[in-house]
Structure formats: structure tokens, C-alpha cells
Length: 259
Length: 362
Image (cartoon, rainbow over all chains, first blue to last red; front, side, top):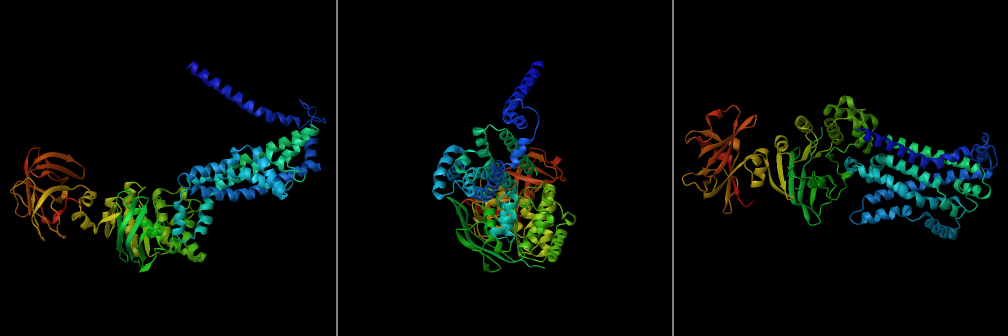
């Protein structure tokens, strides 16, 4: 009895330790952002929100935030319908095509992002899309598609195709049946996919580094410059904002799923 | 009030790979008739129904409704009410919007929709539930919503695919009665699929028993129960006694001689000519009466000894050993079974009309 209890306590302690280990580096950035100094120190000296002010007032930082938001929003708009259609198509595959289709769709996750980045750089440079938001959106759509497909496919697996047939038997054309019956029932998956698409674009660094040029610098790329050239506490502030955004979106996703 | 339309199925065939799901099925359902396709899973009954609904594209044959060929028509253009297995209600819409769906597809005015939905909600006794979410309904209520949704646009034909399969016995019986009432009230033609023989017997005007993608027999409940055309059909409707017989005199009132009995002949009423050389005579256990001597009032008399008694609730079963093999007899619970202990000699007697004969090979 006591030994069992001991084992259970030991498990709790170990779990807590792992959680702290996972969270610590991420959370440690937050205090760095409230320092009064012009450079990153630990522990922070004094308390000031001046680096958050810099984030929202300096052209470089606020411009990067706007670019990140627009890129992420457009990526969501492009990747969500395409990914949804891919998931619908995938659900209709039969036999060995199922496996082939699944691997093909997961390819952007399996292939190292840097390889995708290099490949996209070569292609988009030729098209003159380096340093433009459309170029970034194209690149991020490639990354985001698998996440949309996975989320929609998960809902589709539980979806009863007979309600589509029921709609047809009641007088709905194939398009009306899809719009009025299939799509509303896939919405939780589509919404989750859209959130993941947004997050994927918002958090991406590798692809953006290749494609940002000087015209389309996103927040992660701006942070990288900030660290490389000045070790500014603004980077810590930007990290905190990014962290906050990601948590918010994940919470939103959890809330959507629960409904 | 909508009148039912006739359904004519001609030589319908559907193949999945090497398997013939339905093999040259022909069936005519008259206006306002209630016809049941009865069979085990894989017999082709659902495939036939789904072909009529337009969800199975047949490899051959044709389907006509009201005399016009619909074989190439998409499901939404056929104007048929379909009730699916597990109901297939729209989970994102409430009861009212589920039922209003077919009327909205037909672009009816909202006021007309309101009236029609109220009408069918009354018909299926769900007056007060129109604002409920589908997930808040019981199985029986979901079934009623599915029925209302399939009827609200007054289709001339109602197709039902195992509509009561997911419900418990008591609810099933209650809904059987209600579906029959609605059928009578609306005069709609019903094509109904089930694997439940009692359901088929109690609800249908005619039953088509299906196996291996073919219709084995088509007839009224009385016909398929009392004069099955082969052993499969006989076995489908509960217990039956089969006796190996030779046909001594063919014709309308054939004389049969059970194998292994020299001085006993049996009599049957026959609707079809006999062919082949091995025959089976069939008699239902509840058609047999028990006496203590040969009784000239009955065409068929067979001596035996009581082997076993089983109490079954409403009825009791007696197993009687005869020269032609064991014969099961079903008696009312009220019959005096105590007078028939194991080993007691008895005479089994039944009417010629209760005996069916068919080729043993079928």
C-alpha cells in the first residue's frame, strides 16, 4: 500500500519536473522583456514596458507585426478551402490510393522545412515574388495545407455520408447538399484547420527567412535580426506577444472543438 | 390527399466486383400498395431499394415510377420520400428545419412551409417538439422526425430501409402500427426493407423474400407463410416441420407418401405443378392438432410418441417422434399438456390446406 503510494508520488514529481523543464525556456523569456536596460539581462533590472512600446511604435517592429498578421490571415483564407477540398477528395480514394494520397498530403510536414524553403526560394525568385506578401502566402500555404487536411479528415471520418444522401433524396442538388448539409457538419474541423493554418504561418521562421527579402519581413524574421544585430530586449517582448498569440489561438481551437 | 404511384422494376441487376448484389430483379408495386423486401443482410434487398431511390446505379434493367422511366434520373429529381437506416437526420438543424428542408429545396413560401410542417408533426404525434435539437430526441422520436421529413412534400412513393432496426421491441411494435396507419391515411405507395419476418408479415400487403440477389417468392403474408415456394422461404418464417415424401399422385390434390411409412398417405393443397423427384412436405407446428386415434375429419393423420415438452410462455411445444422423423407441435398454453407425458402414444392431425409441397432441391 505505502509502496504504491510512494510510486504514485514519484510519478507526480517526475511529471511536474518534465513539465517545468518543457515550459521553463519559454517562460524565462517573459521577465527579460520588462527590463529598463538597453540590453538583455537576467534577472531584469527595474520594471518598464518601454520595450512593448518600441514593439508597437518602431516602424521595423510594428511593420513586421502587420506583415505577419496579413500573411497569416491570407494563408488561412487560401489554405482552408484548398485543404478542405483535399480532405474531401482523400476521403473518396479507394484501395492503395488511400496510402499514397495520405503520404502525399503529409509531405510538407515530413520534408525538412529548410528543403521546402530552398525549393520555394528558387521558384519564387524566378517569378519575382521574393520579398512580397503573395510570395510568403504561397510558401506558408504549402506548410499549412497538411494541418487543414488532417483536421477536416478527422471530422470527415465520423461524418455519416447518409445525411448527404438524405439531402439528395429530399430534393437538394449535389452542390446544395454540400453547402447546406455537409459543410455545416464539417465546420468544427474546418475551423480547427483554419486556426492551425493561421498559427503555422504566424509562427514560421524558416520559410519566411528565405522569402521575406526586405519587403515582407515577418515578426519571427524581425526577431532574428534583432538578436543578431543588437540583442535588444524588444526581442523578448516580441517573443512574449508571439507566445500569448499562440496560446490564445490554441484556447480558441479548444473552445471551438468543445462546442 | 396524395395518391400513391406505381413502381415497376424490370430485370434490375447490380454487380460489385465478382458479386451479383442483385440479379435480374423484377417487381411491380401497385398504387398505394405496401410491399416489403424481406431478407438477410447481403440478400440484395437494400441494394434494390437504394437503386429505386437513385443512390445505386444499376448495371442493367430499369425502374419506372408512375409509368415514366427514372433509371437515369438523379435522386433529387425522383421526388421519393426516403427513410434511412439510423434516420440520417441533419444534426445541425432542429426538428422544424429538418422537416422543412425538402420544402425549402422546392422553394415553397415560409407560410406554406409552416403549415405543412405542422401537418406532418401532427401526423407523427410530435406536435410540441419542433424547436428541439436532434441530439435531444430519443430513438423513437428521431424515427418519427425522419418519417415526417420524408412525407412533408407529399411524395407518391415512400421508401424505407430498415427504419425500425435500431429500436427496442416494444417501440418497434408501436411504430409498426403507426406506419400502417399513416400508410392507410395517405394512400402513399410504400416499398419497405426489413430482415424481421414478423414486421414483414404484420405490415405488408405483399412480401418479396430475397436471397442471393433474387426474389425467392412474392406473395401476400398468408401465401408466403402457408404456401412457401421453397425450403428457404419456409425456414424464414419461424419453425416448420419438413417431411421427406414421394409424390404418389400429382395434380391439384396430390397424394404424398412419407419416406419410411408404408400405410400412411398425406394430402396437400397445391397451387403450382410439381417437378423433380425428391420432395419435401412442410407443415407449421401450430397447424397440428393432437388426438388419441385416427380422425377422419382431418385429411392428414400421423401416429407417433411424445418425446419432449417445452414451456415457451404463450405456447408450449411438443416434440413427437414419428416414423417420418421428429415433428414439432405448438399448442396453446391452455392445452392440457400434463395428459401427454414423454412416451405417450398420440395421433397428429392437420388439414390438407396446411401442407405445402416443394422440390427438395430448391
